[in-house]
Image 1 (tube, rainbow, N blue to C red):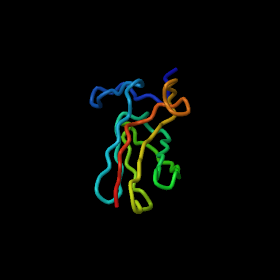
Image 2: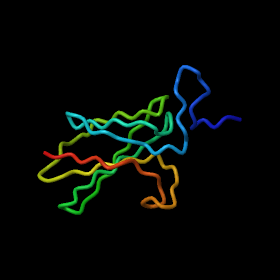
Image 3: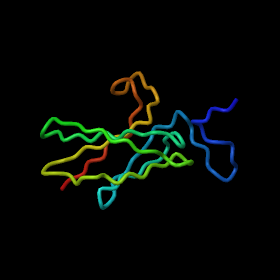
Image 4: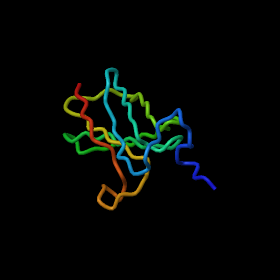
Length: 108
């Protein structure tokens, strides 16, 4: 039986390895886009304000190709906002034992 969290075998869609590290990019308008996540899967964004030592977590869902589009409901306050994402794959060397994307930094 096929794993529903993995991409289907479709010659028109590039296959993404379950072992690929997801990558995110912050774009104008407080939008985060990402690739190499599990398809049709819940992704958690961790938003960290280092100056305040506070983190918030927001939940989004990837599309059938494993791409992420997330519009943040808030803009960064004074200082930097660090954003990283996980689709809950395990990584013994990652924070909390999870595989995390790169970290993007948003500034106000």
